[in-house]
Length: 517
Ligand SMILES: Nc1ncnc2c1ncn2[C@@H]1O[C@H](COP(=O)(O)OP(=O)(O)O)[C@@H](O)[C@H]1O
Ligand SMILES: O=c1ccn([C@@H]2O[C@H](COP(=O)(O)O)[C@@H](O)[C@H]2O)c(=O)[nH]1
Image (tube, rainbow, N blue to C red; front, side, top):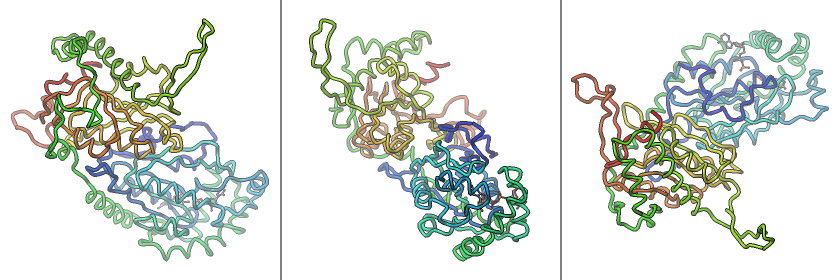
């Protein structure tokens, strides 16, 4: 089931629900039915670009309608973005806005659009990078100060009158569509829509139509139909839409990857053992003092009460966060003490720093981080296993501003928090997500309670050799099992009736459950 009210998760940031956001802002949406499976290979590199559909056609021909029908008909494709070309109208001067209100500004010429910016945003989204796209107000004829963050689509549908006009855009499309509609019908729909949704008068719409819209359609829009792979009628178009969605679904199936099993079972020529030199693997283990062992003994004990579990987890999280802080670069700083003496000290040499927890089990580490960095921004990633395949799925992204914007992300240090690294598949997905945003590998410090030495740690290290991992213990085992309450009665284990999980042994059990439930 899809709808605009569903996808609050990916685009929630910078989404100010004020009245200045016109219909146009709501045209750019990200819809999800289930999480996004791995889009990268075992070397950590993205291997499947998003599938991009470009839809052109005259104004009010039904481009947005076609885009939405495709999404509906796709059903269960993980994440779909509808990106409207209208977002890329240029920034207008006072004089231009005055002309626009008098229906004397030409919005239908290709030069009215910032094509290079449109192509750059689309290229980023296609290559699995984030994009902060402009928000345009039809009522004000102006680009607004806010932007809209988008990330994580496996299908992108872009629509606009000039969507097939620019060669740099056409090069990005996997499928080019032209919506062919009768001129009378387009005019009738435009009058109806512009009066209802864009604050126009009938006279104004007609004036603009005759002066700019119709000539531009004949000169610039219609000729681009020759680039289309499919021409879709502007009404009664369900057959064409079915054809398109069948094609997209097939493409998605071909791109599906099987990842977690590979990570857990990849033959490991050099396993991480408790006595190995962990630093070779960029794994920094807390000194195994009797005090630390005492904390782990309490945490591993199944008889430990929830209250004690929370207390000791919070203590341990603080130790780990302190250790992680040691990995930051520091610069000299001279201060004056209350005795009015100069003191040559140090301070972290970082521009931006934040935490990102992989929910739910990264949550118990947040308190520790907040104890050592009181005002740190903490974002979250929801990675869950597909109940049938055990593959990781990215379900939810909520990142701090210093990661959402690429120009800030390159200078951001991230403490990535998760309770344990077993197969490493969730860690892998989280690290890839940060890299997609422009965070540098050596600025990622993974903080965790446990690492399984025969788990995915070696694959993780091979793919991301500069990521450092701070943990309190390295455990011996990793075992695939079925979670009891998902078993079907007396049927044994089947896909669909159980949930496969990998557990670290001896481990601490389900850390998130023990902390929160
Ligand atoms: N196939 C269709 N059947 C009925 N109404 C349609 C159809 N396609 C579009 N419309 C209506 O026409 C108007 C303009 O459609 P829209 O998709 O917004 O056009 P465009 O994006 O090309 O400007 C909307 O009110 C929409 O509901
Ligand atoms: O400020 C503006 C910007 C654009 N327009 C008109 O919008 C259409 C394109 O939007 P569709 O959703 O494809 O119809 C274009 O024909 C411009 O004339 C505007 O009126 N004011």
